[in-house]
Amino acid sequence: MTTWFITGASRGFGLEITRQALDRGDNVVATARNPEAVSAALPDHGDRLLAVALDVTDEEQTRAAVSCAVEAFGAIDVLVNNAGRGLLGAVEESSDAEVRAIYDTNVFGLLNVTRAVLPVMRSQRSGRILNVSSLGGFSSSAGFGIYCSTKFAVEGISEAMRAELAGLGIAVTLVEPGYFRTDFLDDRSLRTEGTVIDDYAGTAGAVRGAVPGLNHAQPGDPVKGAAAFLTLADAENPPVRAQLGSDCLQELENKITQLRAESEAWRDLALSTDYDDVLV
Image 1 (cartoon, rainbow, N blue to C red):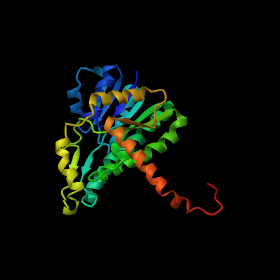
Image 2: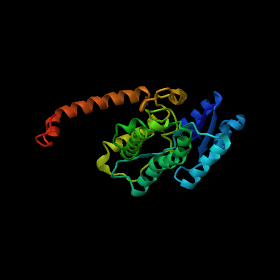
Image 3: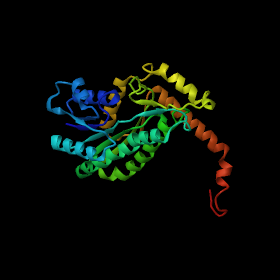
Image 4: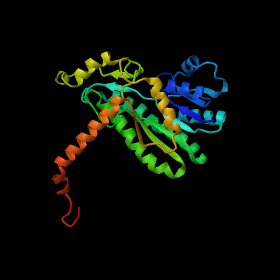
């Protein structure tokens, strides 16, 4: 029986992954700022569901939540770093306080949870870590620059962890969802920056105006997306990255094409900076 530790489990992907893991007979430690919401959404699962209060920005509370998990189930087999928040606004419009707040959750919070769980997995010499990134983890866009930068950070951290933990029986995978019909674009998850600079009306401002029309009209199905997390957790050889959604896959292909074209166009400049005795 697999034991999961899931952050941000009160709604969206976190709640649906919890539901599907329980339905197949697994144990789940479902953490959220409001764990009562998890219990209310998923009643009648007995001792296999442990809903725990967790603000991932609180390191002491994080360690306590992991201790509760080990005490209840004796192990943590799969960690899903799902808790996150968004920020909508041009980079210049984004206040220092808002930038720090999103980094506290998306980056430092993920690190808090990972540091607390890894000693358990290392002692087991086994485990899976699924770090929730985004389409925005490899392709940034106007209006979402700060949010995307946090996911770029998660990508770099996860790549390094993949290399560091491979010999210890622990696999790390970046899960990169496109736009899914969750509550991510609601006010509870996505903060819209109050400062508006008119010069960005055609770029970040246009995105700001378009977002309300996208909410709950996204192409991705959260139930199918959550099922993909279970598939990745069970995979014998999980990938470094897994894209979810046709929009994410298309954006990745566009990014690869753009990078290849630009690197070829500027190849001579890159090669011109080596010492003359370097062979290419």
